[in-house]
Length: 320
Image (cartoon, rainbow, N blue to C red; front, side, top):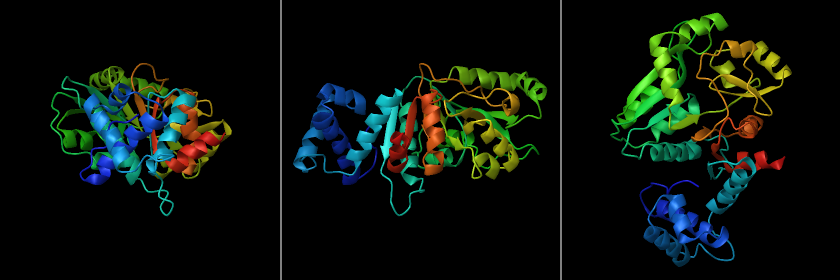
């Protein structure tokens, strides 16, 4: 369950009260459990539950749009064994709008940056993550390090348009470590040579030690981000689909069971190696009907153990 929403005004306060009320009256959590899940004191948890009652959010059911989202988050958590899950409402008139999940993603990144002791935050790239950074407050976190999971260059040497690590580090005042590589090498031999360079080895080592990881999830069809961004051709995507590939994370292709393809195009991927999540949060931030299969596969294979998405996407994931 996510930490309290950090918004100004009554709307954010009521969101927090709705979360606390749902946890107490629907999920049967104690106030100590609510405090832990929301990252607040027991007294604050008690006040939030009381606010949910006084504002008449609690009736026969929680009378707040976020209630359905919390139910979906609970279902996804139980089915896929997630350590974190945040589902935001979908605007029926603009279902592809990124604002909701970007705000939730920014809150989760801010949560990862809260500790006073130094943290290593590893991030992917893409439109959603870049939008998340825009919603982060300006912070001063010189004790933390922000490291990129993948290269920031196109094959012609130009910078990729949706690089995140520099923007994020500037936003929060942290040191940053970009990956000075093309997203795809020409072949496995070239990739190994690139990985042998000292700056790259240092960056990969930081990825190994990251305390939290944030990634986008790409679909693998004619609308694939890797086609739009010019990394692979439509014919190459068609070949991957024929081989059973349904999605990608940091350019690593994977099938419907969340098994990563390390051969073929996988031999050219220069990103930090994608592997099942273990004891650290690996948060996928993605939404949209085109990504439902990829998101479900990523959770099935434990390539991510946390998800930030929207209501419509979550419902479609849970249909099968």
